[in-house]
Every structure is written in C-alpha cells, then in structure tokens.
Image (spheres, rainbow, N blue to C red):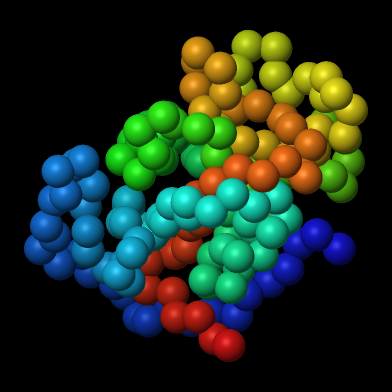
Length: 166
C-alpha cells in the first residue's frame, strides 16, 4: 500500500501572531524552523534528489506529506518557494499519484484534487508507468506525470501546529 497515515494533534485554535516577512514574501509564523508558512500549512523544500516514494516517506517522517495544491495562489507560492531554494527551478516532486487507478489522480495527504496545473497535453502517460506528479516541467513550469523511480527534489507540507508523534 502506497499511502500511510501519520498521527498528529492540532493544538486548540491557532492564531497567526505577528509574522516576519522573508524577502521572498513568505510569511513565517506558526511553523517549525526550516518550514515556511502559507495560510494554514507549513512547507519545506527538500533539496535531496529521491524517488517519489522515498520523497513521500521522508515527508511522512517529518509529520507531513508531499505537497498538495488547491489554488493558483498556493501553486504560485510553491513555485516561489522552490525558486528561492533552487534558482534553476528543477523538476520537483509533489504529492500527486494515479498508481491506484490509471488516470485517477489523488493527493497523498488525502485531500480532494480540486485544482490542477497540468502542462498542455499532460498527464499523458507517454513512457508508460507515469504514475507520479512533479512540478516545474517545460517552459510552462506546470505539472507533468513521470515514472515514480526518477529522482527529484521535493516539497513537503504539513498543517500548521502539527506535532509529530513518533
């Protein structure tokens, strides 16, 4: 089974305290060191090339999942986060997969796929077995489906205020 669950607790109602802005325009507030806050999530760029499943497992070990995207604003935020850590904007794994059923894309965090940013003609399963999604593809810098055993950097996401339970 590809998907796992991570136990976590959310502390009461979180309040966004006065936050300091990073020069990239990100808001740093309720996230642990090394994570960047956007709305009610924390994001971290992982600059270690791994397969998609190893990237997801790494995110799970940090109390999150590979990032899911639910709006143009969030997509642009993730793109800017990647660019701030990787000026070349190389291919980067996100939490999309259709490994359970070909053509039915799911987020590993279990959230609904209610926004997409596929490049024109994608997903296309062009080389067969393209069951995992990454961003920063081609000139459009949108999403593409790729075989899961390719090695890319990744973006992890978790809810603000999540405490990882080992």
